[in-house]
Image (cartoon, rainbow, N blue to C red; front, side, top):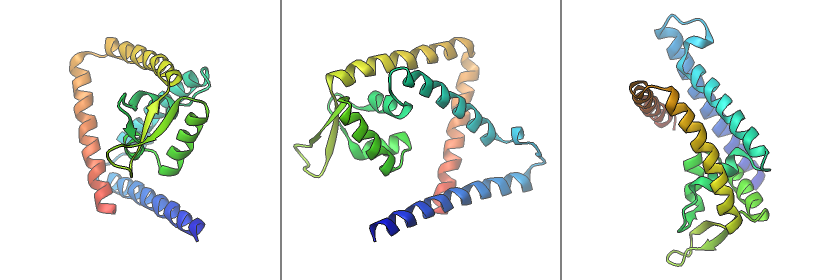
Length: 179
């Protein structure tokens, strides 16, 4: 029974993602005269994210990490972070997050504690080894971002952030209309 629920959940998620992609594609086709993939905003988002993701995964691999592990190392607070907050902040499905946290725990990067105030919450903390890795990961991220900031004029960077905010709002609206 549990497997069939998991399967239904995956199918539901896939269908919602597919529907969203179809809606975006249909709207783009009917409202614009674009014929090449490069004419679409989401093509450029996906293309750039794929390259950034590949770059960070290659850097992480040199330390026997993944980009997901690196990102978790960066967002876990000193006071502990509820495990339920990690997935939404990272855009990860619960199953993938659980597997990643298990790997991190096995490697000694994190530990879990039950919240003293709310026994239903599980808090994630970094171990000393996790803190050391966090410093290394942060250095890589900061170095890359400094290179970007030096090569992008401030006005263009501000425009980029404004456009990304608009895209985020539109995606949220699309997701709300699907769900």
